[in-house]
Length: 115
Length: 112
Image (cartoon, rainbow over all chains, first blue to last red; front, top):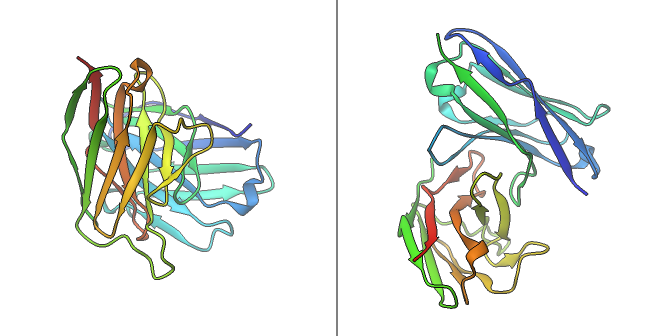
């Protein structure tokens, strides 16, 4: 069974930083693209970033470019999202997902940016 | 970036009847390999999204055959035949052809 478990969410002040982690199990992590998608309270889904199996291709939505960094450790079967210079509008549930399309989703981690 | 426009945004349905959701893309999602890089997802209340349809018309594992996806290029449709109470939630389309993926606004389906 594919399982993705996000961790690292929490409350952070505007301008602060946070690192989200996603632990994968039940599939060969090292051969899949991985993605982050977020959902602000009461809003729809917003694709945030993805990266290829080797870490050589990374893509970001414009609103996080230069502030967020996606990375992975295939040996640890883990995906990460380093978030810096956080803004109020980054408040959301952040989902880790397997794939570039045909996404399989984790349960999400809540990030709240507020003073 | 590619813009996906879903309609309707709200869809009350009667159990046993059929329902359709449209998603129109600002650019073609048809790759030169013949595949449309386009998915449908359902987010049930209080849950994470789940994959329903991938590459335009392929049902994901475990998805009932009352769900079907069709279309090509810029126009896509999700059809639910014989709607059941468990089908309520928000349906999203997503394009995956271009490096920066995008979702539609979502269509909320509930029971009349």
